Length: 230
Image 1 (cartoon, rainbow, N blue to C red):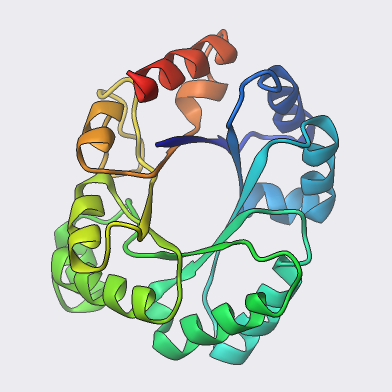
Image 2 (image 1 turned 135 degrees about the vertical axis):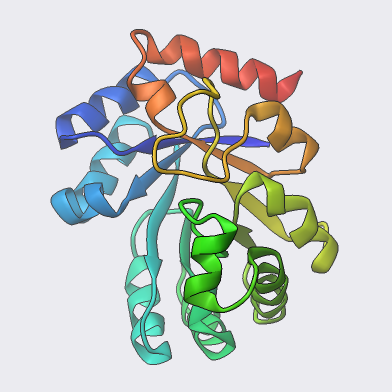
């Protein structure tokens, strides 16, 4: 299991300061989300790499559009020095396939993940939008993602094992909503802790606020890495 630290802070300088602080941590992934990318653009990714060339970058933009637009956008994303990005699984089989074909043509071929159901959904609110339970839809989404060449899926911890059982153990899962302090749920509903993630076979966990809001972020990261390895 890998740790992916979310760079979701209020300024580019704050994000880069955290990158510098965590530079000594080996085998670390860093997540650049929508807020940071819209504000700071591809220069942020270049700056991250200049600070820590060994860091792996997950560009978390959750593409959702018509298949051709998604494929063209994915081609541009693959030209960036990133290692993983994501699209919405609900964009459909054709879109997933087009995106996979597009990035396969690029020299940099980042991991392609699809988004199952946002962790802000509980089952009732999800059903109002998608017309079915989270469990049923994710089984379908994971099937079309796997069959159309995606490398893995973004999901809550509680769907990770089910997704692998529905596809293949090699199909990766990335799980946000990981809490260090379980009393703080913020806007996410389907949350879990590190032990839950290990038990449910998560391949990547995303942790943000518990790290960058801590008085000593690097110590929090070291504790998380120790828990991952134990």
